[in-house]
Amino acid sequence: MLCAASCHTREEIARAGALGVDFAVLGPVLPAPTHPGARVLGWDGFAAGAAATAISVYALGGLEAGDLDTAVMHGAHGVAFRRGARR
Image (cartoon, rainbow, N blue to C red):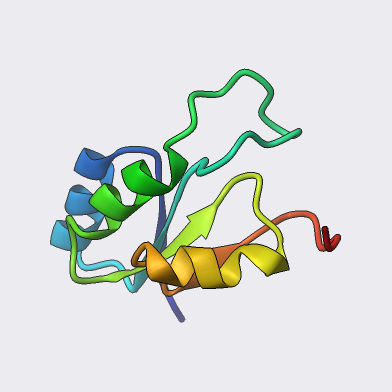
């Protein structure tokens, strides 16, 4: 079994790493229809958060499969998304 953390800030990612979880999701990276009005990290904010820990971090929030390359360039181990639609 795996244990994961859902994080929204650099501090939460650092805490997840200190707790020894297997991986974390960090977001929202982009605006998401499921969370209208939520403060987004943007890719630079995601990169700063992912750099705060040695655990695997997956980008989440407003993303689609086509965002994988951008996510990896910003330190993500992958993307997680609720919608599977392609742009």
